[in-house]
Length: 124
Image (cartoon, rainbow, N blue to C red):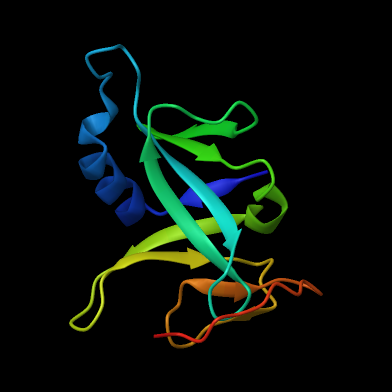
């Protein structure tokens, strides 16, 4: 199970995490990545900053960024590359997912994988 951060994504996540230094309680912040039912294509990506991973999370580290991957989402996130794009109209994290059989061209945050059938919700 691998999730890779591009150089730009790692840089922006380090800034969001405050350099990943331990907090006052000694816990180190990381980013938790998962896939949830929803979005216009059936699934949507989620990223949360946390210093308390779930007990079944898969934990990896890239550079100075701890990555917690939701165990149930792991098959849909295997070999995903998280990038950070900057543009005039849109900036933010972008997921490049070889497991996706379709992506939303509108929001860019939703995917369909295989024969999965979660109900999609139209983009707003």
